[in-house]
Length: 173
Image 1 (cartoon, rainbow, N blue to C red):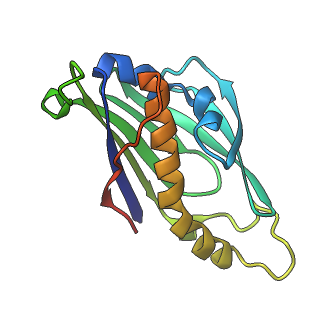
Image 2: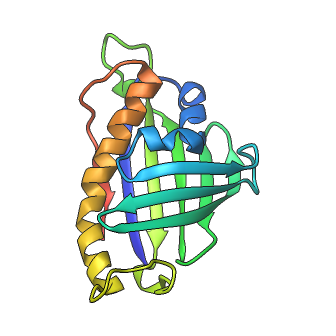
């Protein structure tokens, strides 16, 4: 299993941050490769999200299910089709890290644990002579730059303005 663990700081309380990480339907605004999110549920445990992804000549819809919510601290999810993957958004108060111009801060953690070799080879229609292993090799290095883009845009939504954010990489494959 591979693991990605990233974090960044938002200059808001966990109660103000959590609705943004919980709102999967807004995620297409944060990433260049997520085209659409179809929601079946209200964001509570059992809610299912179809995440329509596109990259290069490929498109794929991942089905994600919320498996645990402890607002405003944690939201756990799991992919329910085609690949063994699960993860969590965590929000921890970190007021000591707030700059002098801000009242408080929270650290936002994104964790994903996945087995790239568990992918169903029939789930993605690949161009002729392209293997799933080749696709995995090309996608994995792009994960960090995509994660940086996501957290920068997420923090801009949370704080109501754009700023440079620092992405802390705690673990990458």
